[in-house]
Amino acid sequence: MKIATRINSFLPEYDNDLERVFEKFNDIGLTHVDLNYPEHVKGYTNDKIKHLLEKHNLIANGVALRFRDEFINGELGNSNIQTSNNALQLCKQACDFCREIGGDVVTIWLGYDGFDYSFQIDYVKVWEQIKTNIKEIAEYAPDLKISIEYKPFQPRAYAFIDSFGIALSMIKEINKDNVGITLDFCHMLMKHENPAYGASILGHQDKLYGIHLNDGYGLNDDGLMIGTSNLIKTIEFIYYSKLYNYDQAYYFDTFPVIEDPVEECRANINMIKKLDCVIDQLGLDYFGNLIKQNKATKVSDFIVDILK
Image (cartoon, rainbow, N blue to C red; front, side, top):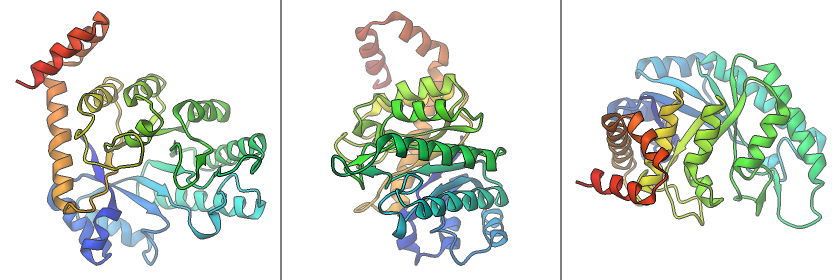
């Protein structure tokens, strides 16, 4: 199983030294790394990042775009075309970097493409602009997976790509073989979506390019440890990822604030390995038969069984 975690949870504890963070990742048993671009790589050459990964026995899963400063009124959909073009170029640079360090996935989360007021944006114009730009990114890097991560809100009151349905519609219109979706468990709860539903549809279509595991209560991006408040939903989510042979890293997008980040990450590792073991021991056919019965009481029996 390929597993990675949120670098920003570790940096403050290790003097913002990426090498010390990588060393700790290796020590606690992580296998892969997702780097935020450009924030995590400022001051590093591509060769230096590759060296640090190899030195600490880690593999690049990919990079995630982080837009700051000039992009707070929108990224690829910004009404200022120069700003939109700058966001496009940053995505292309991220693709070049991802390729250089041996990564597979470039994750694009458009946190600032959205709106806070009625009559603030031209929805169709923004839709077409984002679609055209992502299509250009996909054509620029046909050897990479370009993955859209959605979130219903935060930091904007309304995100433009805010849900499974909107993200799926967008990638259908883009219609590129290398464009898919990253599912963030907490983001889906915020939208009152069942994470496994999205994982099953995308897995079936070979469009599940990323999984961010965490947990929460649905009102906020809580970033709690996995399986701690929605255990059965988490098992179902992982089941579908396994059923459809998901092959990228499971990324722990959790936010230890009070918790020690190393202990918190170890708890996530222990949890995902335990849930993976439960699924393997019961077998994929077991869950397939459970679903076919279409009986809530049988699901209750399953929960009782795993609690024995």
